[in-house]
Image 1 (tube, rainbow, N blue to C red):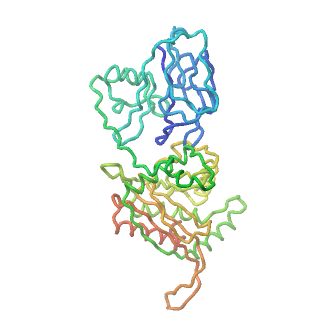
Image 2 (image 1 turned 135 degrees about the vertical axis):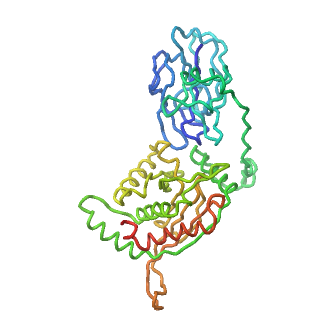
Image 3 (image 1 turned 180 degrees about the horizontal axis):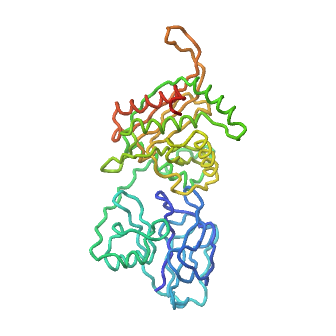
Length: 426
C-alpha cells in the first residue's frame, strides 16, 4: 500500500514549515537516509531524510509552499511492486500558502483512499516522538505505544523494523490532550482599534510565533524571582587586555562575554545543586556545565549551547561562540546545537543597557542578564572613594528548581569568578 510522506517535525517547537525545495521528483527511487527535500523550520533550513525505501509516486505539496503543518502529507511513496496506478486517491493535505495553485495531479492517476495520517505522538515529558509514516501505521494496527519503542533510524527515528520487532505487550495508552495556551486579543479586535490610524501589518514568521508562544508560556508557568549584583570588572578587563596582546599573533581576541561564559560554567560546577532543570514532575540535576548564550538574529534570537564550557579554555570558548553565533545568524544551526543546557546568558551590555530582567528559557533553571560595564564611584576597602568599572547583572531564577539561598550562592560564585578572573583559570 502506498505510504504517505508527512511534513516532519524537525525540531521540538516546530508546528509548521516551508517546503523550500524538493531534491527528488516523481518516479525517483529513494532509500532510507536519502535527502528528499530542504525544509525551513522556525529555526533553520534543514534537510529531510527518507526513512523508508521506495519510489516517489506523487508530490502533493509543491516547493516554495509556506505554512505546511506538521504531519500534513507532502508526498506518496510507492513500495516494491507498486505503481502510480495504485495511488487511487491523493491524501488530503492542508492548503499551502504559495501564492500559486497547487500542481495538478497527473492525468494518468486514478483516485482511491489512503489511510488517514495520525498526529505525531509525544513522550511523557511532552517531547515529540519521531517515527516514519509506515512505522506509525503498523503501530496503530498492532496497538503498540510508540513512546515505548526505541528508534534505530536517523536521529533516533522509529522505523518499520523497530515496530515489527517490538513485543505485543507495549500497548498504547490513552493520551490526554494538551491544555490550550491562553491567547490575547484577537487580530480583528486590535486592528479595529487602529482602523483610523495608518499602520503596517507585519506577518509573523515561524520564529516569531515560537518566541511569542514560549515566552508567554515561560512568564505564565515559571515562578520567576530575581537576584541583582554589581560586579567590579577592572581586574577582568586588565587580564583580558594582557591575554589578547599575547594571543594576537594566533588571531584570537577574547571578549568580556567569553569570560562571563567561563565564570558561569565554573559556578555551575561549584554549586552543582543549581545546575538543574525543571522536568514537569521532577528536577534533573546535570553534571556537565552546558551554557546557552542568547544571540540576536534578524527577526528573533537563538540560544546556542556551549557544552562542557567549564572544561574549555577561554580561547576555545571564544572560537566556539564565534562559530555558533555566525551560523545562528545564517540559521544554519542543527537542533542539538540550540537545545539543552541548564543555564543561559543574555548580554545587552554592548547596546549600552545598564541592567534588565531576562525571561527564563524553559526548561532552564536560571538565566543571567548582563548589563554594560561603566565607570562609577565606589567605596574602597579603606573607606576612600575611587573610580571602578562596574557591571550590573540580574539572575532570573525558577523557584521550582532553585530556592533563594541557593540562587544567591550561585550568583556569589559567578561574582567571585569575574572579580578574581585568574582564579577561575587555574
